[in-house]
Length: 476
Image: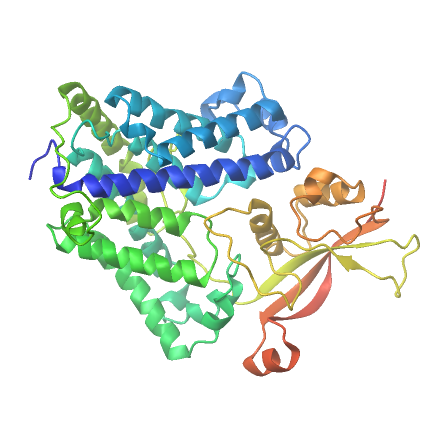
């Protein structure tokens, strides 16, 4: 094995870099859409207040110099423009040092956003994007062959991502070891997709096969990513197929898509290229990376090795934590998902009324979200890899019944005052002309309808009211 360069992986690098640029683009567009409303100057959890309360070392960000919504939007639009340029191939049209700088800028910009995003950016795939984005700085461009060490840094990331997700399941909820978690998961997952109803109604023996296959894919296959070819390519294929299954069954922002993109680093690009007739034959000649680049890369390898000690120790720990960053730059993190699976789905539904006096006959009209379940007759939509942060936080809100978060109270206030920026994040505003006199948060028990119920009612969901999560709030 050539520990300097891996010319056969030119296609793998191309796919990883273009795919990562696309995810960056979606992430910046999501920030443009939601950040000012969620964490802006007058957001639900204002970033300026957070910046005053948290020291720099815990949340380094360019916005330490100054925060305003205009600066945030300018930063996000700049990141989106650079991401689009990298997606179009700009990184391969400039010298190697300039390509590294181009990849470093979106990483720094997105880090600055994530570190002040608070609860809205506390998802594992935010750290995953930042860690992958940092490693992408050192993958080189068409001026040189793909660096072997850079490729293995990506494989190490995929290994920790998949193994962490497998171990947290095996150690966590007993239903994973009993192979019964998927009796519930497709129904209770944060944001079901258009096929989730059908996945939920698969025969129970097939659900057990799903769970067993997940254990194989996440506990055994990750070790095969380090094997010689073609075994590593087959292991990457298993990871990709598993992630495609998750894409089909739910909405997990860009987690599954980015995992697939990163897994391509283990694929033998030369072998794949021979099956794709539109690619150049012979492949483009790329010289070994320059000495200075190799020296920088091995310095990064040493840094990642040191920073990997705590995440690796966490993987081996019976008290394993998931989705934690051990450094404020999110350079090397620990990952995991669904260490426990909820058996019952609760939903918080925001409702308003135009009545000035409340009574048992008061008519309440619901606000509808884009992604979270609401209208029982509406088929869940596919939004991933785009991230709907407000919809996701509404799922977490339902996990704490009758104990409303401060940000939910702020959200109801925005609805009562007819805040147009906030209303643009919703799918349906039942009060388009005059704001409601009262808004409440109602807690419901949701479940997928049975096949018979679906046939007779044409509804995807059945829901049962449980009470007020937040009692009626009057218009100020």
